[in-house]
Length: 109
Image (cartoon, rainbow, N blue to C red):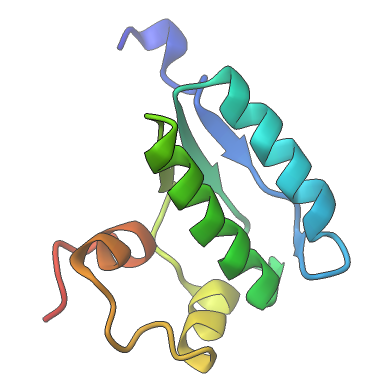
């Protein structure tokens, strides 16, 4: 990858990642993935998040895997995103792939 295209795969999410706005986010993400072979997903520290965002990311991971594309978070889940993962019970029983995607860790300790 050359320096000129380092950030071409970066997709910055809106600050509202809740059920009221997730349909628009989904459409934008699908459009982005249709034009790119990989996507690095960024989100702000103060993003509003609920389970619909977690569902969208899981669906995007499945779609990317079946379409020969890759998807990753720009940074490990923290703040509101990590809180939703905890409250939703997603941190228990994570696979190594899940842990790598959400927490940027090599495996569950």
